[in-house]
Image (cartoon, rainbow over all chains, first blue to last red; front, side, top):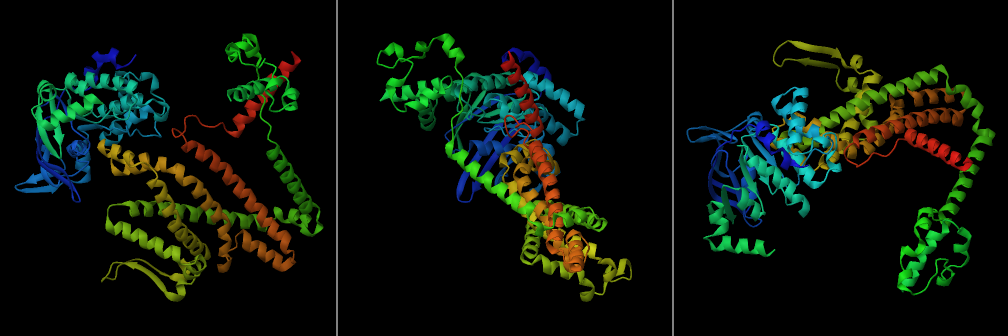
Length: 271
Length: 354
């Protein structure tokens, strides 16, 4: 009934190409509060990276700098070698025009904790909106592809329903379909299941699991440790604006080397 | 004790069938027909039996205070209507004879024209000002703030008179290229500033200052996540504003916006100061001649009531349109409700016959 049955079609609908994500010396502060204090990270194309860490550790901020929703104070972010938000000329970073930033963003999809579906549009309109407005895809084509995408997340029957008439899990699946509509190279998930009732978490994780095998690069900020261990190729543990530890899940989750990682995982397991 | 609660519940159930009995003996558990008492087996709906449960109906609660208030208000309204209709000094006959007079209709047309033109100018410019005010550009938001500051702090009457007398302040209006003799427009101010232009400018710019704040409030009421999601999806600023934010802001904007428009309809009466013959000025002209002050004022009032009523109906349907997606199910329109009531009555009557 859900996406579990439609696994095969996901790869066909989303373009099987992933982008390489590089973060170098990322610094970001809000006033006196340093949120990122020198983050370096490389994510290989087509892999799944889970970012773990206590709240306030800078996970979400890091994610939001990847599509330039937040600008870094220092350091750079690049997708496939293209610096996000700037054009480099020698040692100068020239700010890109709004139009160019928007174009860059169409290559990076984002799924939010609170879904942020457009409340006045039906599920199908939500999915078709960005291709039409950002890429100029003709309406009919955008709607047809929107239907396909809704099918891959198991919501073909809900195409004409407004977000408020859907459960949280269904809303988040529509949001995933909406992010996929631009055929992004990279997909960012900012705690995609944190706002969901426990019994709705699995239907969203199932959709993400499908995507993991589809070739898009995925970065997932999550508190679902079991899911991270199961799906991620690479796990990053952040604390205090820095990456404390990273590596394959067997290592970071299975046998953490750092005291802080161990402490965090114990608290999560205890909860 | 739990008994009372249970007793109350079963009594409510009983009232459906046998209303009188329940009101007879309030608060006495023993009066209960459903065999009160302690046996645990009875403390269950099972005691009622299945067919009894099938037969249960809901009798609406009685609201004596509400009924009394409705009655009193009804009597007062009726008294007021009688007092208005039967007092000959209101001269309803005069009202009737002037209501559709050609001069009144012409004045009404002017009032509507002024409302539409200054409404469009007011809300169009208001939208631009609201977006400017919210823009990240200091210059844009500063300009917008200054506009609102000036036009909200000057009395409308003064603004109107300044526009109308602009010719006294500035002889000619010249639009040209500085330091050359090229001019795109060169005209005498008094030729440009007709009463209509002065009235529309006065009302429209004043309205824009208020509309911009009202629209800005609506935009601020939309969750910031909506804009964030749209930017993350690469949707351009124009579409973010017009397709994502504004439609959702409309729910907050519309009730106050209709207030403003309705205010504007009557506010147009202020242009009597520059002798533009809209409805109110026309009425004044007539009663100045005939001395039938009150009846003529009633003619204008009745027309204002008609316009406001039409606008209120429009407001209902426009608000309903923008409620799409914001409520789980839209409430039925009055027409739908009427139809439902009619079919409901019909089915009830057939039931009775059967």
